[in-house]
Length: 351
Image (cartoon, rainbow, N blue to C red; front, side, top):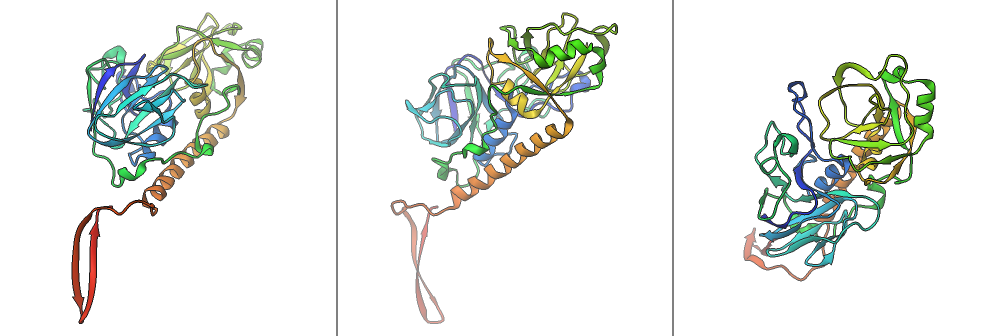
């Protein structure tokens, strides 16, 4: 199957789980902003968890389908539709030659998701990943966001993909958290670089996501976090996903998918996995609050995501293997077999 990009959307790019293993050489990880959604969307189609997909931001693309296949939009409801008919998020749809995929815009909270296809987006990997890192023009389609006229190839789908029509994710498996819940921070080794009053302000204040936020970092505006006499500068060290960095100006910056590999500003801690998932669905102008968490909560959230992925796999297998009440399928052949003098009629059908 191939995809013809008729409209590019606001920011549509090829992403997978990221370019791991090259940070020591200064190459950022990149990858999907909403990692749990990508993993679950892929296994709903029988793909490996890390198969490449199209990450869609706010206003999605218009795509013409050449050939046949299946798709799922995993993430916020951005009005995913096929031939003008709404499909929505977390529901698989079988695509036919000539179908047109469109997005009607956000249908509530959230601003991004992953358009996953059975077989995954087929792009030559760069450093073991198909993820697009736009700043360095690495990966994806020429290292850039998609544009009109691009042709995207889709890989070979898993067996029984034609039976995926209508398969949907149960509500309890959707990884999205309450959009108004405080984001959980596991405080880290540099916590002592901030005054007690500064830390109190961070966990008691409301912050606004600024328009300068992007895939590299989420910039916040609000109460200024005060440093101790140690100041905001440190010897540069590694920056993990979700690190809450606070430079000398005292405004938090939360590091996202396209974050730099190292940095020389103090970090008060790191967001838990599901708080990261909640943050990347927020748009500029949204308000955020924080609360303290410990390592065990972060581990529990990772296990919850892992279990959701496992159950999604299990439910897909159940869906494609169950008996469907359909019209009779075309016969492949009709045979007569005689065994020990007893006559048997055998019919072979496509399944």
